[in-house]
Amino acid sequence: MQSFRQLASRQSTRVVRAQQTRPLSFTRTLRLKEDKPQDGHELEKAKQQQHHSEEKRDELRSSSESAVKADQNKQDVESLQKETAKQSQKEHPHGKS
Image 1 (tube, rainbow, N blue to C red):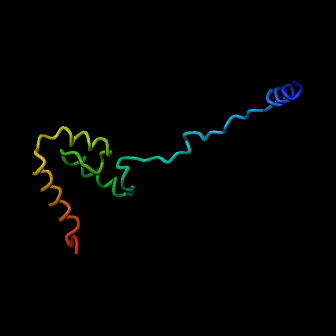
Image 2 (cartoon, rainbow, N blue to C red):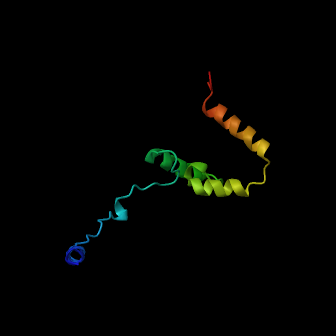
Image 3 (cartoon, rainbow, N blue to C red):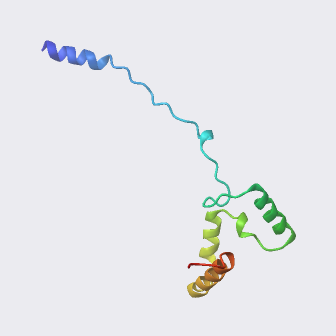
């Protein structure tokens, strides 16, 4: 019985410390396209081009905005795949070896 009392007294004197948390202000800020880093000069250039034209620039949309726009698109999948292949060929003319 005495060992039970000692065990109970040890547990009651245990100090519980709160785990220190890091404020959210220290998390890395991701802006616009989260999947690729963008230079401030590139963004400013795209903003100026969008300002002078009527169409929206895809570089200025976030990934989620681009996904929503793609979901709302009425084109069929084959034409979108061809358009993507054409754009990829344009950006990387040498392609795969």
